[in-house]
Amino acid sequence: MDVKPSIDGEMWKQRRQRLEALIGTNPSEREQEPAQSDTDPSERDQEPAQSDTDPSKREQDPAQSDKFMDPLLYFAAKDGDVDRFIRALEDYCAKEGVSLPIVLGLTSPSGNTLLHAAAESDDIVRAIIDFVPEHLISAANFRDETPVIIAARAGKTNAVELLLPQGNPTYGDQNRNTALGEAVRNRHYEVIRLLVREKPSLLYWGNQESKSPWCLAVETGDVEVLKCLLDAPNGGEDEAQMDVHAFGMSPVHLAIMYQNKDMLTEMWEKKPWLFELRDADYRLPLHFAAYTNYLDGVQFMIEKSPKSVLKGGSVNAYLPIHVACLKDHVRIVVELLRQWPDPAEFISSEGENILHVSARYGSISTVKYILKDPKFGHLVNARDSDMNTPLHLAALHWQASVLLLLARDRRVDLKLVNENNMTALDVVEQDMKGMDAPLRKRLTRIILVSAGTPRSGELAICNPTGQSKGKELGPPELDRLKGEVNTRMVVAALVAAMTFASGFSVPGGYNGSEPGAGIAMLLHKAMYNVF
Image (cartoon, rainbow, N blue to C red; front, side, top):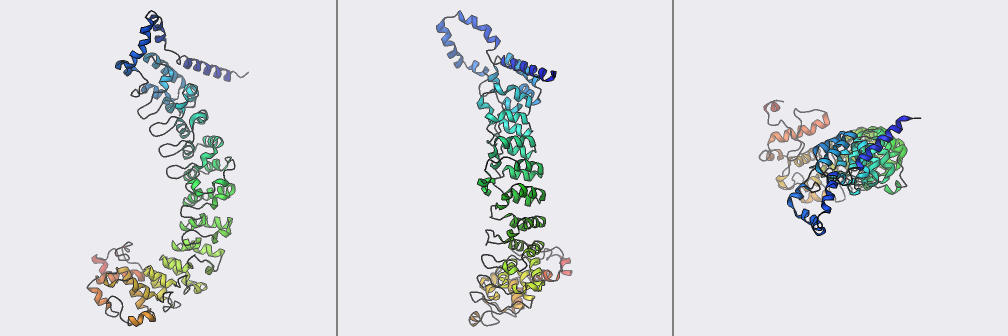
């Protein structure tokens, strides 16, 4: 015969009896009842009304809203020693002349009840749960935390199980974190398994940051936490939840951001449909991996789903390779080209190939890679939907460094015009307003003029060769600029552009923001001029 369970059961029976004794009328109140029977019945009927109107008696009533729980009770509950806690309750009830239900309704200055304080102890929750009014089991403190949220955060599985029936586990705190979110964040495996088993819908409850428990699991970096969620019974909800709005944020995208391949593997093996979710910008996971330059992630997703390289996103229907180009991630471009060697097949909704996109966004390394490989020669003068060549787009978006690379390549046809019958130089000059154009635009024009880019025949009739719009002159232009832009700034900007082609660097680097983008940071330092 096992004696220990018997002893334990008897101990809990005694504890319950002690608490039950605190429910009824206080002994001191029972002693006063016979004396009241000698009074006139009409006087007895008036006594409750008198006590309700007597200010001194209202102040002594511990049920009043301005009465906080005794700190000794609060800390006895948090201490976790159930017998010490029951003794503290007995002493307080005797001292204050109140019953257990009233004590359980008292709060701390931050709105915590005794159940909130006891939630971090399995034993104390077990002791008092049957005596707590139902509305207090799901009551929230001033931070909107319920007892079950506190118990889940502390990893108290038994307490969570006892609190669940009336504890409202879908309720969130002031940051909308639910009990499951807290269990996930603090890596309490058993509590997680319990909650998703009893309430699977919690998997899709997002917090104030729009992060579901899936995302919180990824943020922990703990694969075991993620497994607890992936192994949860879903009740057929998975297919209905194939929407990023159900998650607030895609867990796959988050795993890519943290570059956690183990988590990607787990999600692919158990819930591959997660990889069909798009983020807020309508990007698939492969797009996001290309965007973040996560090579292992790109290789993983290409291996699992080779066709994903041909799926477009929302921005101009860009493919993953276009995203890599705009971010200037050459190694991702190289990897994606292994799946489909002819880049002419990678076309956006605006008819742009990978060189168009690279030129538009000033992706110098990618442009160099494309121009260096002879097999990509057919991209050099290719047209988009507006008949723009990469040279046009570089000029249109003032990408001086890319423009310099293209203008120096003999394969680039400087005379080509777009659908508006404009050469790259026409595009630049149309956007320049006399002498008010910023240095970056002036530099772009200087590069095109120096390379011998012509104006279109139509514009040349109105604008004779050698004379530009806005009273600008060709050969004397640098002299004219001296009166308006410091000559050293022009020289420094030209050097900045040349360094991209030659691999040469100036001290201090260059300014990366307007106005004066591309200007040497140390331009006005004496030693820079010596350099």
